[in-house]
Length: 316
Picture 1 (cartoon, rainbow, N blue to C red):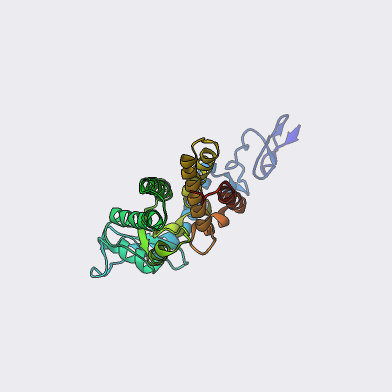
Picture 2: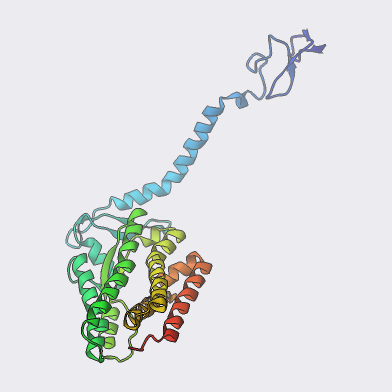
């Protein structure tokens, strides 16, 4: 028998009730915390109530930075500099980078090009893309036929190869960025244009694209998202290169086989140049994301490149 520990009660219980808060034993009458004036009654609140209070306090603390960020987002924008429905970069007091929408249209393009410096647009995105594609065809297909003894119907094959590689590098990257919720735009590059013009008169061709896909909100992407978006086009080109070199190896017709070997040589150059890990390049983001995947891509591209030379890439 246990005596109730309430000060004015001396009732004895065979099976006393033990308070879960103060751990004392009480009778049936005084078993509830409020009936025995429990010294730890403040702990007897509803768990759901306590949890909601904690969550509310946490949300209040977390929302402080968000409030400052939203205040900056809603700040008025100079209408003479920005167009409606566009984006530009800004930061909050903690240094967090984000994009916001001014009140007028072409701000995205203006700040796209002012931020990347040596990139520009001659019109809408499709026009930029077609202009870059045309320059590639002229530099690496038309000029190559013109400066060699190859018949002109080879021009069609070279052009189709360039179009296939060009599309596989640009559009998968744009589609994956869109899937992650980020906008993107193809722009032309001053450096790319200059290199293409030099390559058009050079006997040695180094493949270099006259433009690239710019993602204005790339700073808001995770490391994995940057790596995947940067690598998807290169993965496709590696797959194309492997397919081309095997076709060139096994096809009995020598001329057709050499077409595919040269196509593999072209794609391997594109991948190797794109994987150079300079700042803000595809190779830079892939290397920061996963160095082993970066290494594997380099090894495969080098294997295709060396394989095409061993198979006679220049032998027409």
